[in-house]
Amino acid sequence: MRRFVALNAALISAVLIAVSVPAEAAEVSTAERPADTLAKLRAQLVAGHGVKVVERRWTYIDHKLSPTVDWIEGVLQFNRSGVAGYDVRVKSGPMSGRIRSLAIGPYTYQSGGSIAQSLPKGKKWRRMPSKPGRRSPFLTQMMIVEPATMKAVLATTTHYESGVYRGAITLGRLYAVSPSYHADVANKPDARESELTINWLLATNSKGLPSYLVTKLADPDDSLGYVARNSEVLFTFWGKKVDLTPPPLNTINS
Image 1 (cartoon, one colour):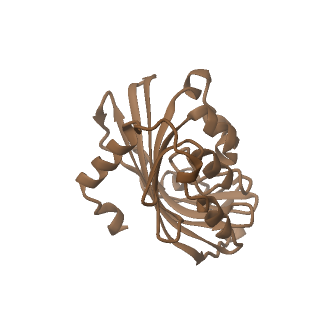
Image 2 (image 1 turned 45 degrees about the vertical axis):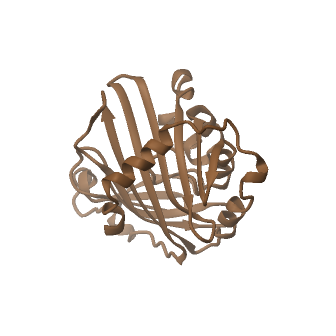
Image 3 (image 1 turned 90 degrees about the vertical axis):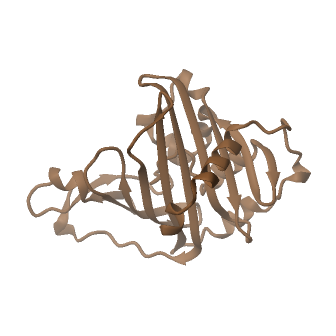
């Protein structure tokens, strides 16, 4: 976490500028794109293993930075198809405290923060139905560790150099291809929002796996005015063992 927070302002600014500025070339030829990035991701989809993730998101309203930084931190667990579950701690908006979100099997369990205040006495967890492969712990809409999402995103690459991809994809296209985003009916983009563009940058490590993802989504006609959300996700410890255990039944309020 310290490594992530300690990223200096100059580096962050440079990355966001790179994401925002269109590449000179409108298209990158297939020959210039490494063909194994998606294959490397698929090779990591082993039951009981996963990756550590940290995400930070900054929101700008009318070009002014919001004082609240949203974040998540935790682990994803894979299966052969993609993300089977996760265990993350979330801090979003003005809500008090951290919320722990634990997705296992057909349920997502949440505890702490504002959740604790709404539970009956003696209960620590709220349980909600959810489906593996149809849920995401991320703040950004781009769940790059989904094979279908990575394939579609990389197809929009406009620039590649030294393990770093850059491009742009519409919100509508992302919604159409991402299983987790498509399942998020409450946040389905309308016709206007579907035309909005997510500018993105994906850096890969020496093994060809995602190490750093930046997304920038700006909406000049949001109900709050001009709103831009910049998200940065750090991926580390690919292949680590991840054991997820549901909470004790007597602590769950369903």
